[in-house]
Each structure stands twice: as structure tokens, then as C-alpha cells.
Image (tube, rainbow, N blue to C red; front, side, top):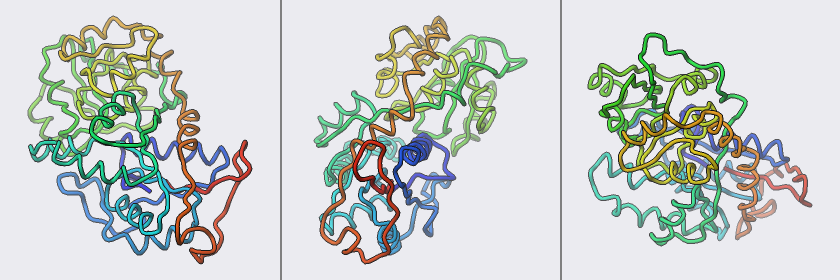
Length: 360
């Protein structure tokens, strides 16, 4: 169950779509219920994101038709809230995952303190049987904020798509190339990167609601717009340093993609970057409170070490971890007889006596 789904382009969608594919290869039957199945309206301040309108009744029918053995709620939007309400009414068990620091995102747009919004997020997640967290530092932070039953669930990277070669030459741009790749929006803090006094050139690859305003404010920066597939991989590989200025991401999937392309990373010493770098056996970038110093320090990282570190993160391991955290749905009014719908398809897990249907 997710409010973040195609055609959105972001780390949450990439994670959920890839894990769903991996789970299917492992023998699960997966049904992803996203906003593409409902009437939607554009999200205020971010029209690229569509929000489902009053999804409760249709959601109930979709769940009844599929008859899941497990329910996972990935987001805290209208669909996530409706799925949580459905499960709570029936005493059914479900898991959630914490992908986005919505409190900080809302704070960045409204200037209201992020602490105002954490009680809402805590209530949402604590109502389930477990919440999956991408990094140790985020897990520790949420524990201090009163979140309970937290489990570790790291991420992966497509090592076939993201490779050191071929690389974008960035013809005509002075070296070194410092690049940001990802969504161009206020919560990504991209202006902090673009204001830095750095040698060479700055490049921004991606689209989003802040693209035109940043293009106007920083005429000396190269903005390529969105890139996908092989072109995206070349954009990473052609950069000398990948600069990640966000202070609010829970992981930063783009960090692994950059490393897989052999490009070292520079970032603030925050959740995501510091976790990824801390687990490296050799320097693959730099983090710190001084982003300029981190960007310059990252230039000395060995690109082969960057690729080797990325190779430790596989999507299969990510999917196996996800499956291990799922809980049986159970509860009142669930199951084939109680739902009174046609039996849903079931496949056995390779190493388990009964294979679950799963709703993401």
C-alpha cells in the first residue's frame, strides 16, 4: 500500500517497485495498491504527486479481491491512512516503513517546527506491528522520539544499470565536475550546494518544482533536466564528485547509484550519507558540517573503492529483509471466508511451507 507510485520518479518508488519485482522472483504474489487506481488531486506545492481522494471504499474492495496474507503500508498519505484504518477496524496486523521525513519536509515549506508533526507520524506507525527503517542513525533518532517496534531494512542498487562506464564527458565544462542528481525541490537543499565556492563546474541532473527558480538564480550552473536509464548512469559516472546537500532524507538511494558508477560522494553528516560512508572499508567520499570541505575532500577518493562498496548492496538482500519483517494479517473479518471474495492466487516461498500474498 503506497501513496508514492508510478509515474512519480523518486527513491521511494524505485525502492518499492524493485522490491516488488524481487519478491515476485522469490515466489511471492505481490499486489501494489497505489494512487494510479483512484481519483486523485495534485499535492499542494508539489503537483507531480497525486493524492487519492476518499479511497476507503474502493480500497476495501481491492483488498477483498486480493485476499492478502500480509499487509505492508509504505506511506502516511491518504492511501496509507485508509489502509491503516481498514486494518485497525478489523484487528488486523500490518507493517509500515519510514521512507520520508515528512515533519522536516513540511517544516521546510511552512517554517513551522518539525516537532509539531512527529506525534502524528508516531501515532500512525506505532499502530502497526513493526516499522522498517533504512539506517541505524534514523532508527536511533526515531526511538528517542517514541517510535516503537523498529526494524532495520537497508536498500540496494542496480549494479548492471549503474556502472563506471560509459561516462558523460560533459564537453566544454571545466573540471572537476561536482554534480547533484535527483529531485529538484526545496527539501533537497540544493541551493546550499550551488552557493559553494568550488573549482570547476556544477551540474544539476533532475526535474522538480524548484527547477526553474534555481535555473534563474544560478545561471552559471548546468541544468540538464531529468535523465533516465543509461543516460542517468552516464551522468553519475561522468562527475568527479556527487554532492548530496539534503539534510532530511532517510537514506538517499542516489548515493548508492553514484557509488556504483564509481563517483565519490560529499554530504552533510546526517542520516543516510553518514551511515553509508561509515560502513565502507575504504574512503568513498566525505561528510561533515562544511559541505565545501567535504566536496573537496571527496576528490581524493578512489573510484574503484566506490564501486566496490556499492557492490555490497543488493536488491535481493533488500527484498529478503523486507519479507522477513512481514507479519500474518490475521484479525477479525480477514481471510478467505470472512472477506467473502474469490480466493486470491498463492505461490509458495522457496524455503517456506506456505507462500504469502503481499500488499505493498
